[in-house]
Image (cartoon, rainbow, N blue to C red; front, side, top):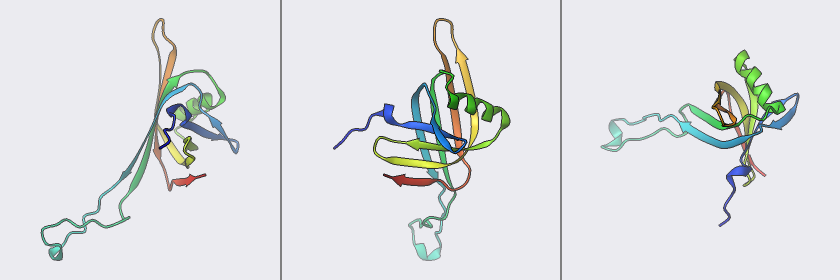
Length: 134
């Protein structure tokens, strides 16, 4: 079994038709949620029945790192102030690529004395997300 490195899980933002890697990232987390639709009825007996592929799907991405002022980080900061929806890609060493439109739910920067300036972002999917494996 091959183990994949977390450092190879990269977040990219589309800037003028080119996906630019968000620099300085230390942590990237993704969460896919599927809403349950209860289809239970009198014929179900005492067991719950769920409707397949019928609920809302939501993909959340959380990322944090140190601020390096690269092109993608600056673009994301502007996107946060404009409340815009942008196209992002999450690429894994395994070959998984997740791509789609995301709303920047939160953008945070912090700087403590004697420490690096850091940032964190939270993205929420807006429309259908594409999944592929190369």
